[in-house]
Amino acid sequence: MARILQRVRREGAVDLEAAEFYVRSAVLALGATVLERLLDDVGIGRQGDPRLCAHHHPPRRMDSRGVREKTLQTVLGPVRFARSRYVCPQCGAVEYPGDTLLGVAGTGVSPGLRRLMTRAGARESFGEAAEDLHVYGAIEVDAKAVERVAETTGRLIDDWMKTEASAAVLGVRRPGDSNDPIPILYVALDGTGAPMRPDELKGVRGKGEDGKAKTREVKLGCVFTQTTLDEEGNPRRDPHSTSYVGAIESSSDFGHRLSQEAVRRGRKRAEQTVVLSDGAEYNAAIAREHFPTAIHILDFYHASERLSQFVKDHTAHPAQGPFHKQCYALLDEGRIEELLERMRQEAPCRGLKRKTALKRIAYFDERKDQMRYAAFRQAGFFVGSGVIEAGCKTLIGKRLKQSGMFWSVAGANAIIAARCCIYSGRFEQFWEDTGS
Ligand SMILES: [Zn+2]
Image 1: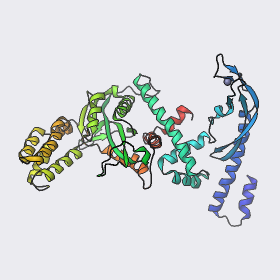
Image 2: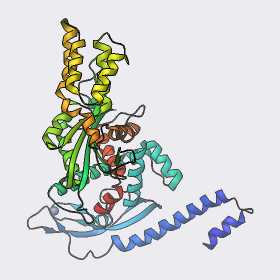
Image 3: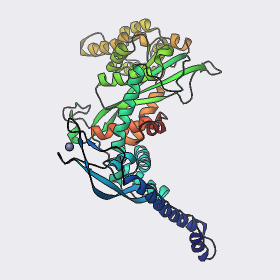
């Protein structure tokens, strides 16, 4: 302390900024020394019970074979860690009990630093994350290291979230879990494309004219609750009640993931469950299979877009003209049978044009019960899936769809899991639970 003060004072007039950074680096270096001393007591010496090699029945006793040193990257900088090495005389397996004790088995990065690297790497590009860690924390790691740690931890987060959700399904309760009924529980789902490496796109059909896919669909779901209406009688999402799950995976896997998350969020206590979707066919399949008693609402905006498309492509009427307005009003009121009739009247009379027009009309016919908008509003439900669309933009798009980014499925899924965890406000809980 005295030495640091002396050094800062010697510079003459206090340059506060220079002093801040100088003092920080001095304090970090001091901290690293303290940490190193602390670790001296951990890695070496009697480990209590004898170490046993699990590769044999009965387990074989391992021998202590000296001390090995490794450098740990920590939030205070690099720290040397000397720990006893155990070897199995029979199969040669090597173990470092000290590593297990500190949570650094198979890694040179401390848990504290892994936490910062994962958070930063999930929030911004790995390069930016490395830069921010340097600027904000005087932490020297490169983009590759951030990537490795964020992805490894992201996979652990994915496992943890799955375990938590399936535990909830089995009825395991967490301390602090509520028993209160939930008036309305919403489950919303949507998808968005993420740019992939070419080798991850084999066998994936594309939307483009050449039929080649450049992206794969990230499926994102969220669960939130609604207890009250605002002064104007509009539904109000309960603050901090939104949790997210998502992945690049089959719709059947995603259906299970979303359904388990809904259970974790208290679906069994919900007086009413509402599924909000954009009308994609697999959404309806998920709703049917996993939420058979829920009210399924097709996002009003999507439905009205479909209607505009129909008017434009299949009728002679102008957009926003009287016919369009009339149809819009019918849709808005959920009078779908009347809407279908009007659409059929105006559809082309014959030929291929009629065929495609009827297909577009069938879209509405098949989903009419998801479009009873007046009744939904009357019941105080949300009729828009804005929450999940915003989620697709911020949670997925902002991080995964930056120019020049190409993902592997495993890499993308790890980062998606980490982001879902962060945006659901569960990141701290993960570290607390897993002691990772
Ligand atoms: Zn062995």
